[in-house]
Length: 269
Image (cartoon, rainbow, N blue to C red; front, side):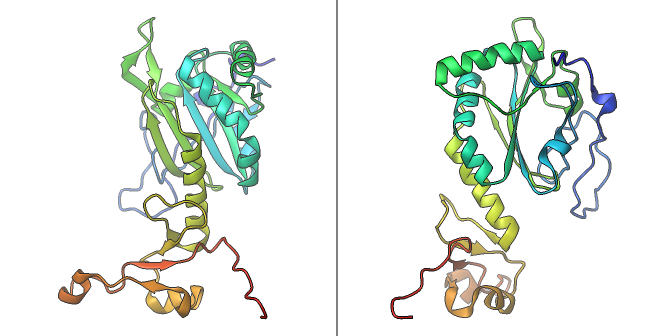
């Protein structure tokens, strides 16, 4: 069974910046916390299942990743969160998302905690929870909060959610205080937003939900947008700045229907 002693930072791959070109592109130092655009490092070590967990192998080449960071087992808010995540396993599978937990305890502690989660929430946690009892991986990742300490005076893990693209690049980070439980419906919503944006070169407006209209990225010219989505499918928003300022790009607000939703054929067609 996992004892969380193997696969420390010396076995993990270095944290590099993402593939997007940047004049400041360079290797990140080990104390830099991964952020959007960085390639998330390959966590290797133990979970409640085994001692040879490999994050990249677990995700494969075509899955998205969802990592829940937790300061420790048997904490009230985190208990409800992992139960809620377990209850949405079919939703994550439908979206091709591999879920991982991360908590600063050993494998047996994780297994005991999972029993409590099942009892408290009715949901069985079947995804791996990475072990980090000595906080070595948390320190290496730069996710320890020096201003938030446990009863022993040790810095606690920042309660962040990382969403990774299939190429392991960080697509989104949301960080929560210890007092606020994560909204799993919002996490599903942002995954849907990231996936439609990744595939179709669109953005999603405020309060968007799947099926709602999306915004065409400004990287596409009008001709390119019309070639991709159809001229009659695009709504160009007329705004004052475009009429009176030559410095503002024309048609920067362009709506189109959610491209993941198939149009229903008209009757008699």
